Structure formats: structure tokens, C-alpha cells
Length: 195
Length: 195
DNA sequence: TGTACATCAGTGAACGCGCGTTCACTGATGTAC
DNA sequence: TGTACATCAGTGAACGCGCGTTCACTGATGTAC
Image 1 (cartoon, each protein chain N blue to C red):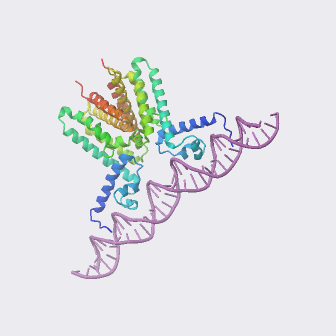
Image 2: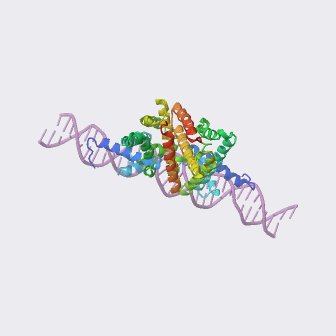
Image 3: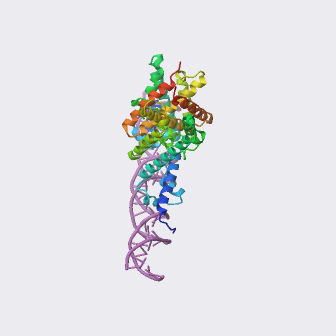
């Protein structure tokens, strides 16, 4: 049998979370533990040495995906000049690449409509992550108060997540492109600071 | 055994589609045929006298739900005076009632993120239904050309669907209210005809 | 009009399958002595 | 330093369960005669 170094367990745990995070986003939380472990060349039984239940994994996988997403958006915004930051945010989120990459993309777009059936603990984590992303991007939003900008961020984020999910659901590639393109334009105009 | 009148079969079929349409919207397409038929006081075996497969039912249930939704939105718009029509559309869609009623509400909001895993035939039907709703509401949108207004309708619709789904996913009722309220305000402003 | 029969919506057992979870087991290690 | 032993990540069979689908069957009817 293989040898387990001191950090080996922790490492395996992280590999499970990472794989789960990608697979849940691609195929929903219905993905089985068997498939998940098999992808890591492990057997399903070992899963419970790392997590008390699948729900715990789901919560961690979703949280990790939100973190990843936040980092990516933040980076896109940081790399843009001040007057282009909002555009960078919107064009990164609503890019064709993000649309084609659900496994590595925004967990909100990937899971919105099934999320309300998740256990409360997972939904609570999602709520927290959404608020975090909103406050992360609030400074780019129009509005005279901090609260107003936070709310604008919530609207933009949930709207873009819906748009991305709809674009993915549709079979006609032209309709998909139209939706993404129109949304980029509309959101950019609607959320630009006026005056 | 019960007697079946001439229209009885057709009627049963419609009852199955109706129940499925509500249940799929509430709990996703994972709802079983057994549960569905049981709710109608029938047994699962009889299902296949009405549908070749579950996929066929899914397609019909989703299409029916989109039709229902279109009718409801159209009615809300018709009952509003001209300068209030856009407001009526947005406030109907993003109402607390609609948020609380996923079974009887918009199938797009209920199923967006799982829809891209449906069979192609179902996804194609969804694409068609989305275009239909867009053209139904296009005349309320800003834009100088018909195509521009159609695109605006697509953006508004997919954005509101995402907003509704996010509002449902969240556990904190205050966050839910904030999202809906802010979205109503923002979308109304953003999609009002300017000038 | 009366009778024999074909029809077919609905029944319920059965199929193979994958699910989440449990558990007795394996065996390489770090540790106690 | 050398040896006995406890630890515990990972294995794989087994559990009860629900899934979509099939199929032989039931039995009230409309229809053919």
C-alpha cells in the first residue's frame, strides 16, 4: 500500500474539495461521491475519512469556488485602468470563455436554480459569499451611499449570473452570443457612474 | 376498475403535464415519475401509456410553464396604463409573491442552471420559449430598432430570472428582500425609455 | 335487442442501475520501549 | 539501535433506497355481429 506522508491527508482532502468544486459546477450537486473519488483514483469508502457527509463537502466546494471567483474578478479589476474597471468586471464575467467554462467559473451561475434545495448550511454559506463579492465590487458601482453601491453590486451580480446561465442553457450559438453581447453592453451602460 | 370516458385519456395526460410542470419548477427535473403519478393517485406504470419517456414529459412541462408565464406577464402588462407597462412587467416578475411561488412561477428562474444538462430537444424548446417571451415584451423596451428592443428584452428577462433565483437561494430574508427591491428599482430605471 | 369480443388506461411486480453511507479489513508508518 | 505495537488513510463488499423503464395482467367499455 501507498505511503501517507504527514501532510498527505490534508492534501487529499484539498484534492477532493477541488475536484468536487469543479464537478458540482459542471454537473450540479447530483454528482456522486463514487465518481468524484474515482476521478482522484481513490475509492468511495475513503471519502468518509475526510468528510462527515456529502453536504459538508458541498458547502466547502461551493465556498472554495466563490473564493476562486472573487479572486479572479478582483484580479481582472486590478489590472484595468481606473476608468475601465467596471468594464473589465463585466466583460470578464460575461465573456465567451466564462460561458464555456462552467467547471472553472462562477458557482452562482452554475448552481443558482438548484441552490434553494441545498441544506440550510450550504445556502447560508452562499448568502455570505454573495455579500462578500458584492462588497468586493461595490466601490465600482454607481450610487451616493455605500449601501446603495452594495445593492447595485448585488443586482449586477445576480443579473449577470442569470444571463450566463441562460446563455449556457440555450442550444443556438447565435442566440447565446447575442445574449452575452447585449448583456455586456446593457450592464456596462446601466452601471456606469453617471455625470 | 374505473371507467374511462372518451376524453379521459387526454385529460389524464394534461393532468400529468400540469403536475409535472409545477413539481419540476419546485424541485427540479430530478422529481421521479413515481412521485408524480402518486400525486395524481395513479401508479408509475401507467405513465408510459401517455409519454414515450420522461424527457418528452419534461419538454412538454417546460413548454407549458413558459406559456403560462407568458400569459401572466402579458395580462399584467395589458392591465396597466401605457406609461406603467414596463413597471408592471418588472414588478410582477420580481414580486415577493413570484419569489415565494416557484412551483407556479417562471420556469426559467426555477430551472436555469440545470437546464444546460437537459436533452437537446428540451433545451431547444427553452430557447424558443425565451425568444417568444422576448418578442412578447420587446415593444416595452428602449432601443431604436426592433432588434435592439428584442435584445434588451433578452437581457432584462435573463437578468430578472437570475435575480429571482438568487433571492430564492439565499436564507436571510432581509437579504432576499434587499435583492428584489434593489433589482426592481435598478431594472426599471435602466430599461425606461430615455428622453 | 342481446351477446361475444377487441381495446386499452391503469396496475404492480420486476429489471438493472447508481446513490449515500457503513464497516471489517489492510498494511505502511511513527512511536514506545 | 532494534523490536513490538498502535494508528489511520484507503479498500471494497454490503446496506437500503429510489430511479426510469418494461411487461403480463385486469376489467369496463364500445363495437361487431
